[in-house]
Length: 168
Image 1: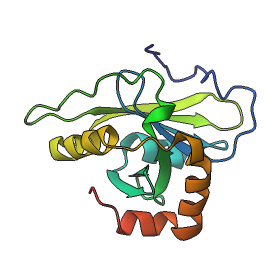
Image 2: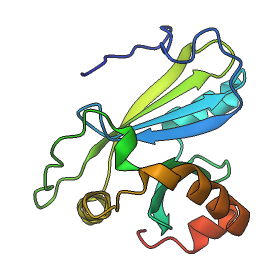
Image 3: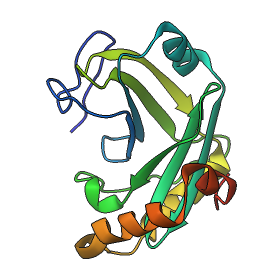
Image 4: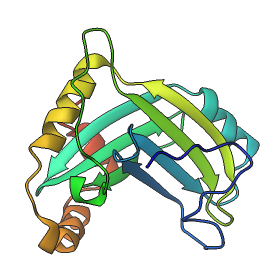
């Protein structure tokens, strides 16, 4: 299913929840999607999200993909991802030369779910191709995904993941 979001509307899974600041990556909504949840994002955070320089990396450990992102001058954010969470992921198109996946980015208030900003960023061709391959080759670790995730966070900090990323 494909959802269309607009600034000022509310994310259905967040509205009414008091979520901590977090970042989520998914590839099951017909395109890759990155959701930043910040508690009451201030005007500078919103501008940085909308117009700041975008950096992306991928770190893999124990069968888990960590999609790392940095929009603007803020710190690196990590989003653990496993293809099993993408319920409607069927086929990953192979990016043609000169084209990459269009990453839909959303910034929402973690307290209310209100969408404060959004932008679409075309990922580089080679980055998109490498991301496609690691998703396709990701092992089925669903039964112990939670334990593996805890171990990864005990072993690596987000800056360490960014420094040691296998895809840059």
